[in-house]
Length: 112
Image (tube, rainbow, N blue to C red; front, side, top):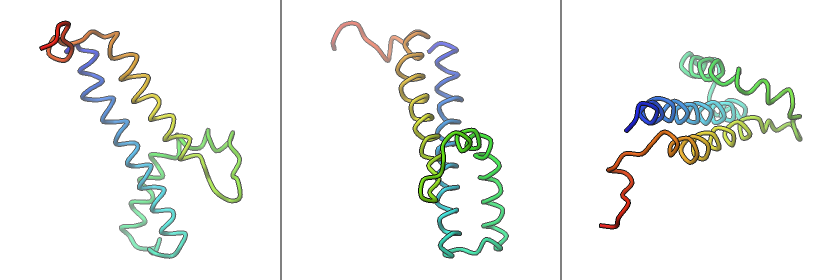
């Protein structure tokens, strides 16, 4: 495994996966607060909400400026998730990974 592949496998891919999880937590928490399932004044809920909002807001705000809300529904998390999945799965793993070289254990030229 080359240095570039190790960087992708052990840093970039997990960070993007963690960002996807944070986006899902932010969306689900906003739904739970919006439908009065959890109380936003609860210290734990408030802390989780502030942390996830601080992480996702810089990424979602540019999308929100371009994409209008349709019927009161914010589709910016969905667009951000699609972009992350595209970058993580197709661009990095499908296009960049093979350019960085492959390990002889991962790709064999002759069948077993």
